Image 1 (cartoon, rainbow over the protein chains, first blue to last red):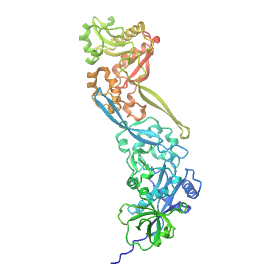
Image 2 (cartoon, helix red, strand yellow; image 1 turned 45 degrees about the vertical axis):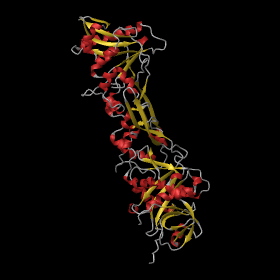
Image 3 (spheres, one colour; image 1 turned 120 degrees about the vertical axis):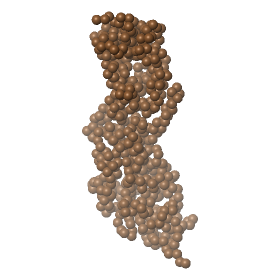
Image 4 (cartoon, rainbow over the protein chains, first blue to last red; image 1 turned 45 degrees about the horizontal axis):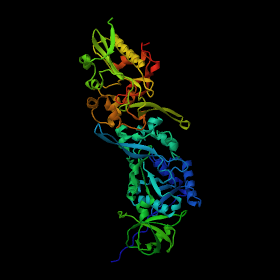
Length: 350
Length: 254
């Protein structure tokens, strides 16, 4: 029996370039209220693109860089997703989060001991590397494309570790309805600012949130004192965040320690070295040939400005990875090139 | 007009006092009427009709707690924002102050008699405090915590929106068991960090510094003698603590 070859890589992740502005606008326009890293503002998005292109190109990284990636469908053509990395959260400013803490109050005389959930405004995640701007065309949500869109960022960070922190974090959109009403904001932030959530999002969109957070009370919030609706919203996800969040959880991110100060959504974080893709990554030599079997592999080249990553079924040995010629071409490499490869857990083939 | 006499309570007054004060309050009071504290009764025609307790210094044996009502300003010209936020901070600020407490009046009296009784008792308490010797470490203030508002079911809206989340037990039971000391014990369970008032439920916020309607007669008496609502409230019902420098109060009323 002759085995048929596995298909070449269908999806390609690469740095965004100037021609991707319409795609960014498309994703920004489709973003519900609460997705702040991409406001629907052409000048802002254009500036973001320029910053990203500069970040990929510069030899002199300061930590201020933002890297935006575009995901292409090589079969159908076109950009179907974007994602990004901010090299240092809160660069030149503070990055605020609420930290979950539990304090125990006890009175021996009353025979009572209570465990109280509190939220502490903190700067713990300042200077960690931050995943940003995950957007996928809904038609591709159930394909393997989101896996590549999210996880390949870890390969890029591992490849260029000197540009990033040893810890990575990612904010996830919290609960809000279609009108932008956010129970957590209504119970906490709104009390101080007298503004609704969409308004405050407009004020903070794309810029540091620190100037808002500076105005918030520094003393802890005692969660039992919040309305039940707000308590329930703590650590809950906006439906749009469920897919990227599930990928991050699978990577091994801790989702229990921090919250977004605006919508109460979970902010995940973990040491880079503890994450699955980084742990599994190996440097292998590219070989070409017909691939008839093999597990799914995240594969990237060693470039920065010309970074490319794919997700492909491939056979690997201790030293080599065999890829079909089209996939090698998509990666922009020739046989013999060094590739960073990380196995992906048994996803259903699409 | 019947003449009012104010004197120290005696053992023989107990049958009347049990009509005025809850049992737990009577247990805590020293009817020997030492130099440190007295239970004063206002008497008309040999009938004790009102009482209050006065102590030279509080919180030196067992820590006493109050919430301090403070203010924090959040301002940002960029947002055209300037907000004053009230805060509550648990503390022992009034430790070693002189205190007037355990106010009680017979229910059947008309308002004019009630006002006269309250005024006579407050005046007597202040005179007793001014005549006595106070220690060098004593706070030179007299304080008087008044009861805060209650709901129709007798519970305190302030407690319902704050304290009960930290102590879910029955307050009446705790009072019966520990008397006024229950506040010392429950303070161990309450928030140690400043609380921003605007995060609390509206009914809870509204109760801060308010008095129960039945306490209005005592508020008026305290006010007439020079005491004013300060920046502290009670842990249980959020009632205000009236206060004044002892040297500034009038034992005769104004």
